[in-house]
Image (cartoon, rainbow, N blue to C red; front, side):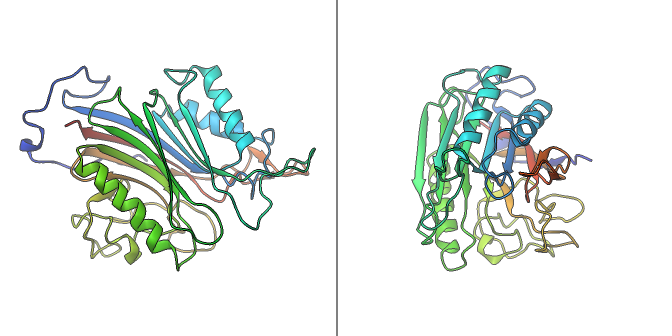
Length: 316
């Protein structure tokens, strides 16, 4: 069941704001957005296919959840283009020619997203889709892990109030470089926030909420048995989960364990505590009857769950 989580801010935080034409369901001085994220394992689980059911699973979930922003990790270029075309055909974006961005993460030693017909391969990457036409794009390369060129990909939305940006990233699993990549992303988000912006960031962080590497991310207001010692500026939008407070719901179904007798949680959606009015997030079970392997047998579409979130932010 969806759980409502409300962060009450001081009234002074919304006094003196410029009044603007708020989206439906929003109060003046605030805006409400829906976010949808999935690490689709486009090569590992779906062998670069655009016809095995993965693209249909993405579009079907987007039809049902109706988000404003979409974040995809480990998406192959052909799959990205197929999703883009499907969203255009559905009339999902406000601008059919300006709503999608893809950023490859070249791999130095792997043959990924291979075309069976030609033998050519392309690196998978991260992608964002925005219902609102982006006015700018940030493509930031993170500290090298010696393997993939990991990125922070963001779009800025001048049409939306409050200096809004939506970002996606996919942090390395390599322990030696992970702190530097996390610090690089966090520092950039803090800079944009300090400059008066509002930033929403989704992605596979390959780091769990209770890991001390995220202590500098979570606000001290998050202080539970499963996630304490925090000193940061952000809320992960599942941190008021009633089953595992401060931690949230698992986003994977592999062997790695998390907290509260759950599997690992590495897919996270963040926003600055100073901007949040309310927020809610859920992770959804992995479909096992939508995607097929090369032999036509059904298999889980990914080793990650779909995560969707709704947040209301102030618009300074």
